[in-house]
Length: 173
Length: 151
Image (cartoon, rainbow over all chains, first blue to last red; front, side, top):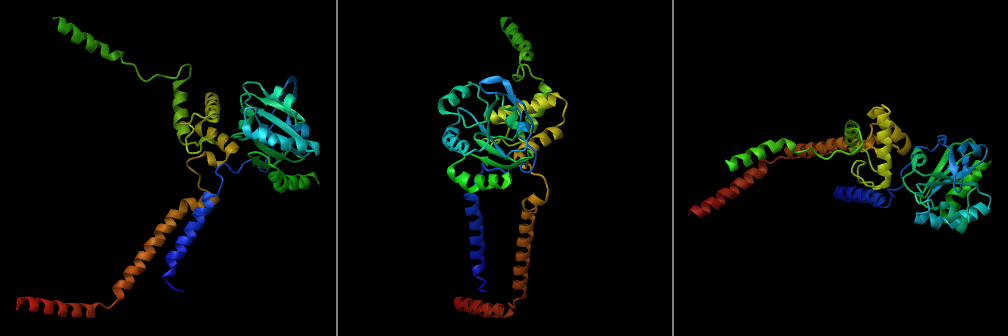
């Protein structure tokens, strides 16, 4: 092999690594929770604080914990998709994260709620227990309460078709 | 006389200089520990800022959480473990040495050794080249030029 080609090959290799790095999403941090039990909590429901909810109530079912907030723009964007999912029978629980202005109940009444239950995490502590860095984030939780997947950013139809739907089907078996 | 009184008044006023403003209502020891620790932790929202320097809301929440844990008597290591369990190694600016980070820690050393090896082989090859002939040739050339000049 021509020795003169070595620098060119080294350069191309380096360029390939840089190009790959340039197109990675720095927001997609691997979650340390994959394969671990969903942290326990008990929080009051939005609009009905007498009633509380905890993840252990979903034992035996495959479900998704959707972390959202009324002030979050991309949550509004995924709301339509979530409504479709609910119509298909997907079990969603909402975690209303740091909703200081308490707008969630009114918003859900206006736009419709895709959730079986929406709970209020006013000071964001449960969010921290789930390693939430921003909204929306969605955790896929299996029948035995183990977190199987975390979607950072809104659930689009593509994300649903390509990642979540096959996974939920697999887990529901 | 009046001037002297002024001078003394100024001298006596020196101890009145106060230290830096302390955060109100917090234990200064814990605040200091928090600041030192948070320098080495990444803010997860604005990813190039430390947890100490960030004004992001999540950073404030996490500082509150760290503060609470310190008040409960947890040491720095326990606090870091708490954060790593939730946010992963990504939260650390000083990544731990483990199989996954092997390339990160040993990569630079590998490239240094590789460079040293290349340097050494190039030197060796150069030394092995017979340069006597070049020398006699150039010497003759030099002598010719010098002679030509002296004439």
